[in-house]
Length: 258
Image (tube, rainbow, N blue to C red):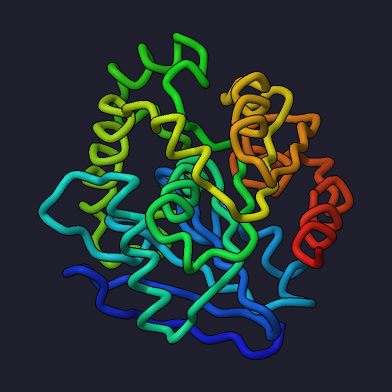
């Protein structure tokens, strides 16, 4: 993992934090809700950085990135990432988004197709019916104390201001409660080569991943045994018998090399 660097850049009124690992063609990593670079991608960064340059960002109000006086939206996150790439003089990149980051990745492909080469969309939601009904009831009642401890600890380990934890939580919850389906014609407009990954015991229904696969013409689909993010070693899924060989790194590398 030669060539580690990190820093901040100004993006639409926020200070966006990023980390860069390795060398080669850029692969941008976009984390999920309530997460940091490390809680989502800590297990796969050392593996992927052997053959590529990884550029991981933290989105508005998450991790080390500042908040703005505005609700979160996937569209805004997509615009922030596109502006970030411009700031870094990256004209085109492969992009891997997980969970909410996967939804942001879809929006990047819809709103800024010129910056996208390959897309990897992990456990992403595009329609409200892509998750079970209980998910929306849970979101309506969501409280900070119910947030997974590993995610709280992950935030507090890196954030400059601990009071930002509540802000991040509330902004993420509000965005989900108000989530609207991405119109089908927008999904169908995605031309980039896309790998859709989900777990067979994911929050996202397998049927939803199949539907996305049918709507994105140049896409491949992988349904992997396990829960939400288990295939990348997301921190809340780690078990004592965790093995790197259970991760989907070879599949990702093969897809990106096409």
